[in-house]
Amino acid sequence: MATPAHVAIIMDGNGRWAKARGMPRLAGHRAGVEALRKTVRAAPGLGISFLTVYAFSSENWSRPKSEVSDLMGLLKLFIRRDLADLHQSGVRVRIIGDRAGLQSDIRGLLDEAESLTAANEALTLVIAFNYGGRDEIVRTARKLAAAVARGELDSEAITAESFAGSLDTQGIPDPELVIRTSGELRLSNFLLWQAAYSELVFLPCYWPDFSREHLAEALREFAGRDRRFGGLGPQDVASRPAAG
Image (cartoon, rainbow, N blue to C red):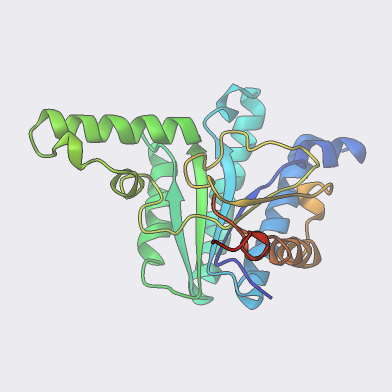
């Protein structure tokens, strides 16, 4: 079975999971953290080398202050409690997103997670934090434009490949598979550049209910897809009339 090296997940539905159980939204977010732990543990055994998760979008700041505070607290708790285990398991942590303006303690934790695990190779866990796909593209364009203005870069040298190499995900392959839970059918500003040719799988379960079985189900769905990247698939080529 063809297995994607890089799987990205939009972890959606924590609040609705909690509401359906008459619980506060924080309970849903806590349950979502446990689902993330299980997914990180399962990924290497399923042949996944890179796992990217949408932890906190640049638009999430518009949520009630109390919920944002709860989410920041959960991030701190996750890194403090889980970083040692991730490191021991050979997981490398990468953070993508805009760190400018983040509180110093949050930035410090993110930097610590990356530096401690930098040499690990069992799995690369990419955490999209204060991340938005459009924002990433704009920040990259500004960075390249500034290099051109300083005379360090010829504008004609900017290609799709060099642009991709300047994104937050530099050195990380594009995801072959993007999974979204909760039944919503959209990308929500997630990896807009990188997901140009990703296969998309939408699952009806809320994120706290996501399990190894759901991940395996998405991988089976991926394996059955005919990935053509804008070209012709084997069946299309076989059906073309012979020349002459």
